[in-house]
Image 1 (spheres, rainbow, N blue to C red):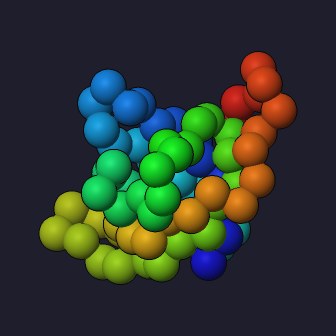
Image 2: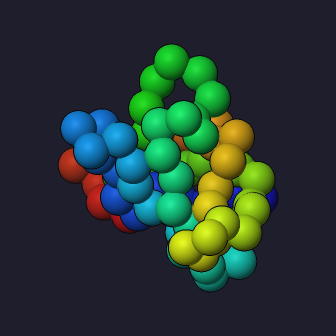
Length: 72
């Protein structure tokens, strides 16, 4: 599934994505594929799983970086 980073904090180690299905997904640094962490507004692809506290995004890959200064 594809989506967009709503908010991600490298300091806290987690964030939230909006999937193209309209749902919100929680993700943590361990769910990110590759060395780069996502920024707010980046386009990403991910796998959806049901976690104990709601929907989670795993295998998150950055597809396209947001233009600087752009929010989700």
